[in-house]
Length: 145
Picture 1 (tube, rainbow, N blue to C red):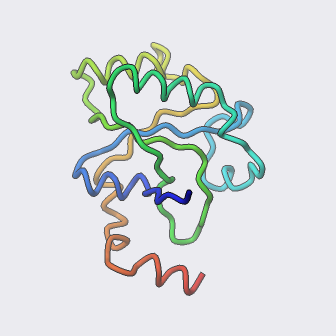
Picture 2 (cartoon, rainbow, N blue to C red):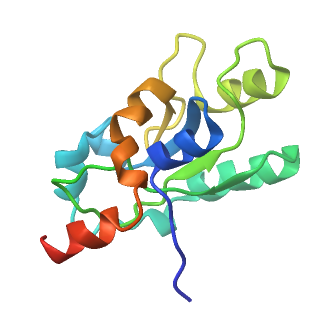
Picture 3 (cartoon, helix red, strand yellow):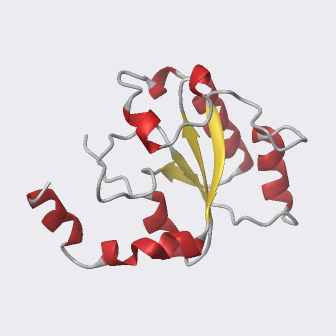
């Protein structure tokens, strides 16, 4: 069944705050940028055990999550790569954030799992795409793509 997956920056604008998400990639690629993600070809995020582990952990903690798309870019269309939005604010004093951070990062701030990258999309960066929220924006882009 098809489902509508929102871009992470659109979620940040809806929440009116910075938002957290996890992006997945092949372990050999490190932290890919958009161009590298496109070059990953047949990367199958559905088979990554760490993705399901993170989802199971979030569910066990009672932390909301949902699939999300990459940061929107009008010059690039990418298929869904398994990213998940995590419904917690970026607040280092919040115990739930601390637990999530301990799950995903090593004490030095590097990623614990080579296939997952923990990311914060700040609201000010998300606001750069506020025009995307105008009715019909994406439909007009699709017509001219």
